[in-house]
Amino acid sequence: MGGSHGLKMVNYERSSPIRQKVWDEVKNAHTGLVITECGDCGLQIEAGTGVAIKHPMVVLNQAYNAFDNHGAA
Image (cartoon, rainbow, N blue to C red; front, side, top):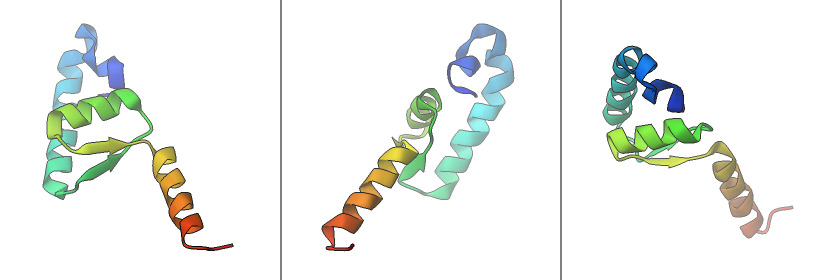
């Protein structure tokens, strides 16, 4: 899959079964969120599954903010 790498015509045939496997695994996980640092991969996963995507740093920031908002340290 590899972001834009998997969309290039020369790589498309090889990446299609990989992309489908990822989509199937995400759908079978019955999750509402996928975490990935690769923006292109995130776009493909979201397009193929409808599942929301977040960058790991966004999740980390949300965790820190939730911690701070509870009056800790």
